[in-house]
Every structure is written in C-alpha cells, then in structure tokens.
Image (cartoon, rainbow, N blue to C red):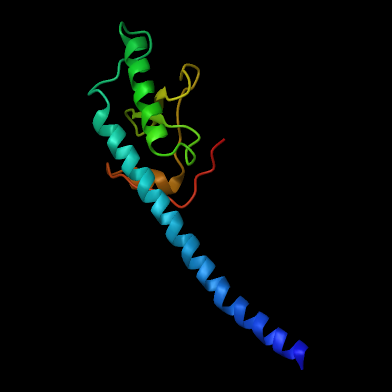
Length: 136
C-alpha cells in the first residue's frame, strides 16, 4: 500500500513539475534574449556615426574607444551572459564584416555569417533575438 501511495505521489510530482519547468525555462530564455537586445540597442546608440576602416588614420583610437564602450556594456549587463560583443557592418550584397570586438582586434576576421533565423530578422533592418546561437 505504501509503495502504491509513493508511486502516486511521484507520478503527480512529475506531471506537475515537467510542464512547469518547460514554461519557466522558456520564459527565462525569452527574458534573457530581450535583455541582450536591449543591450545591443544601447550600444548601437552610443557608437560613433561612422567607424573608420582598419588602416585609416584614427582607426586605432576609435576602435579603442568602441572596445571600452563594449567592455562597459558587458560589465553593466553582468558579463556572465556574454562571451563577446562584436560590431559588424553590413556590406553591399548583404554580407557582414567585423569592425570591432570588445576583447580583441578583428584583423584577420574577414566576414560574419549570421544564422539563418537571425539573418531573416536583420534583413529588414529590425533587431531581435533568436532562441540559441552556438558561439565558436
């Protein structure tokens, strides 16, 4: 009889906890995405209107100022959610190239290819977040 009662309690717990876990995880993921989009919007408003291309006069100092901005934004955002913050520029033809990375120099990085889901969001000039992006 005790085994039957224990089994009933266990089944009830599983039936209640599994769906709740899924809803909470989904909600937290969406919240995190919204927070990262907010950080990206803030950073975009603080960037200079035009970033010089590598090799231009003033490119190094401008890149250092932007790197400091990215570091501050990452620290203000808790830092734990982000591996890196990159600034990319859209070129003709829809390709992207790296301009600045918060923790290093982008020389040697030729282009950035966003995941298809993110590419479709940004194609119209909109901002957004996707469920998961694996960083390499």
